[in-house]
Length: 216
Image (cartoon, rainbow, N blue to C red):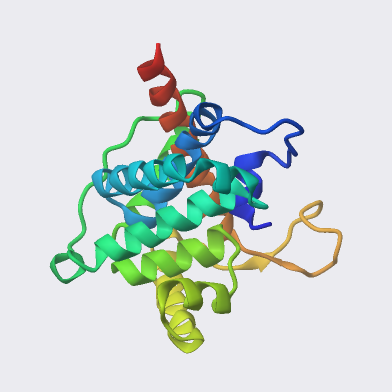
């Protein structure tokens, strides 16, 4: 199970079949947050998420019966983003991202999350996809390459460029873990992955609150 899917399920196993409405309510904010991390464009992200849920609703008996409905929906969303992105990537330029602020975050956490989102916004679309899929979602080069239709070598080169730029912008060089960070002495932590996870959690909190307000 990928990091993204485990985050969506909370590690739970559902004993009773879940109906589509419950699945949508439970996973929409998480999927929207992940789509924003991947695309950097809230409208494009929301369009891909809605299309993925429409497809899931049409095929719900099959989707519900698969090993991981969460894995199915996030893969479908990523494919739709990648497909639609080819129409506008040649016109790509950095844009300011507007998202609802996390309701429970501290001022420092908000500043850190916004810094990560701004840094991600400077990356070309392919580099952004690859670094989020690898460093946030925990996907392998082979998995990313198969989904995006590129070679493992292309995945590696895009990832290297993306990580180099983000590390420079965020001053996120790998460092030896501090006491308590790891049970293995001398293991290096990855501040960049930590920063991406923090930004994704901040986004999720804000989008979940906005989604809940919209349902009341």
